[in-house]
Length: 263
Image (cartoon, rainbow, N blue to C red; front, side):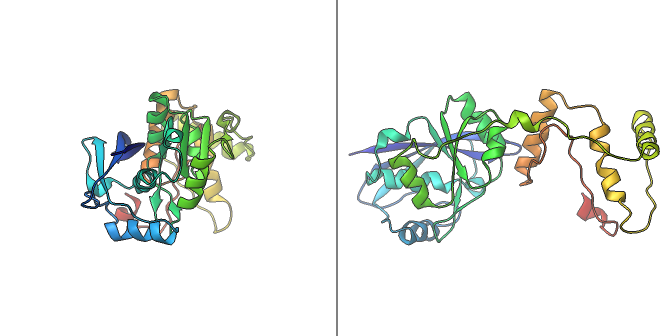
């Protein structure tokens, strides 16, 4: 009887909870059904040319809700590890974040920033995420990040874990870009910010009012480390892209947006 352990997380508000997936070979089939449904996970395995083994799946950690557990990539990795499709020792020091589609593709998940902070605190060496989420994970201090687009790509990586691991250096993106704006407009914005006044923009369409409003975040004082972490966690939990780690968040709702849509 063999057992396989895989590290992952579960979103919990703006934070995340560390979890550990374990499998154990039995004769009664899978005892845990992910929120996408057991058939979705089966389709992901079959469409990736893998079989679904008779194994019991247990999730250690919590508390968490099955409705918020979306990192079923870790469940698939644990099930395939039960079949010894890759060396089990290659799971050491790795955490997996991703949502599987029926065709075996890996979708993005929320709270990658908070999950990466947990991985760093747990001394996880390599974080495996969906394509396009490596930069977000690097902001939390993770250096070795592997982006995968499919379950097959993830298994290939586990068979040869030293290939294509990217080291990120997000510190170069923290610097503020140069601000180019009319001196009178900049002066008006500085006075409004310093005095905490409201600002009413009135101009024809296409005159750059939204662009001027966006410059407000670059005139405000820089965020301290705690504010940057809280801002990044909120954006990550909401599924938003963290475009600049050092700038304060900015929203530009359309002028015809209703109050519920803005909130």
